[in-house]
Image (tube, rainbow, N blue to C red):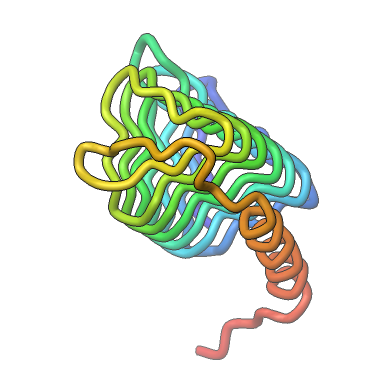
Length: 172
């Protein structure tokens, strides 16, 4: 797997986290227990810190970056879908960011909230607990998120990471 120090900054990855061999993790990155980072995902902690909590999945092709002023944080038990871009924002525990979404500087996605696929959450936007953010730029529908769907997605990716850690093998 491509895990790199940047100067004196080395990623801190919990031993039970699954980092796919084709993912890239650089610099000031922290990844918690039971979390997973999937193929082609890039976590680049250069100017600031990227913090990933426990039991959180960062799925295929997602890009997580920071700004000099703002770290990027994803809490425990969250799902970051395929091809997502997060930069200088906070995704609280128990939230889901759908495929192809973008969440930008100083935005906060609260616990139990969902960012729908391909939505763009612009600078300084807050998606409240239980809210659903849809569209470009995202419009918020309060109380429309499904917490059971989030919990189910978290569990499936925790199980999938365990399977990949024990069963995946390269054939070429």
